[in-house]
Amino acid sequence: MANLKTNFAGIQSPNPFWLASGPPTDKAYNVNRAFEAGWGGVVWKTLGEDPHVVNVNGPRYAALYGSDRKVIGFNNIELISDRTLADNLKEIRQVKRDWPDRPIIASVMLPMNEASWAKHMPMIEDTGVEGFELNFGCPHGMSERGMGSAVGQVPEYVTMVTEWAKKHTDLPVIVKLTPNVTNILHPAHAAKAGGADAVSLINTINSIMRIDYDSLSIYPTTDGMGTHGGYCGEAVKPIALHMVAEIARSAETRGFPISGIGGVTTWRDAVDFLALGATNVQVCTAAMIYGFKIVEGLIEGLNDFLDEKGMASVHDLVGRAIPTVTDWKYLNLNYIEKAVINQDLCIECGKCHIVCEDTSHQAITHSVDGVRRFVVKDEACVGCNLCVSVCPIENCITMKRLTEGTDPRTGQVISQTPANWTTHPHNPTKTGDA
Figure 1 (cartoon, helix red, strand yellow):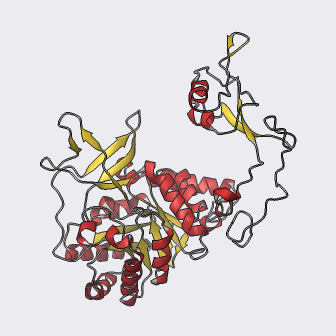
Figure 2 (figure 1 turned 135 degrees about the vertical axis):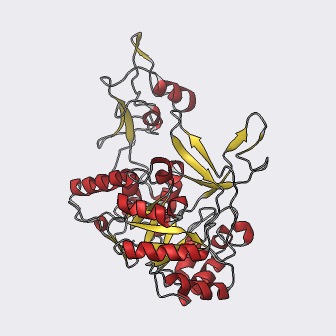
């Protein structure tokens, strides 16, 4: 069995699966249940300065459904902890006494003045937490108050507040980044410049889910009015993976510990984040939809995957995919793949033909010698992968690399590595030390 223990910015954990700051980590009752289920650590729901905040007493969540009513996206307008700071600190102390081997990270959001950080950081540290996560990402409610994403969107603020936090604690400080920026590298670099020990990302994305089709008002509403919320769940994972990978391959942040957040639902999602540079992953939405026991499948699946790959520990997987991530301009334009349809698996639904005929390159037949049959026309196929994406049968349509030879479209000789394909110092695909 592979070793699932992780060392994240000096914080030891029995496995890489942490519960993210949110409703599942709002109180001792929830956190105790989480640890009993097997979660490796938790980030306690964001603590703030008293007087405590007040949440709406009505719908806080909305879902985006797939065709089978499976929740694929989630929106929330919930604020940080609406329980008193004293109550939270008391419960954190108790949970730490009961679960000494499970790290608790305190998520913190405080006003933009150093005095507040100087007052509260030692107070929270005294509970026995293993570290702090600075919530610079909340996109609703708190950003209007000059906190949350209002800080995370300004690199100078990220550096300044991180410096305040580091000045008033000796514990590891993790900066939670907002995705509501044009370039995630700017706040990531700012966090490191401020002395952060790690970053976590992504926080939720600005979103409005839909309208009420009867009243034509935003949905959900509180007494007839609504607001934008934070979008999360499976649908945000590709955005999160991109941002994690950008930080992992940036020269300024290479090797910087990253906690991956955003749509982790299965062990495969965890593998994606880990291979693209995260050291651990945080889960919130999936736990809210399926319950805490999903961690059992996460642990078992990751264990089996590491064993299959011959990896002794989680750290053997971290960053393994980063050397394959590059910029478009460095891709080998002489490399060619084409689609192939397995006739034994084909159910003749015609989806591949329809989408290729209507929106792509007219490269799939709908009949052969008058018989309904779907076959790829090599001379027209550009290898775009659209047919693979829409085919309802797994592995019915696959992409096959052409062997060394001539491209039937152009007559050009196919070369795996063209002679004029030069290396670039900032391209990790082509330099071993990038």
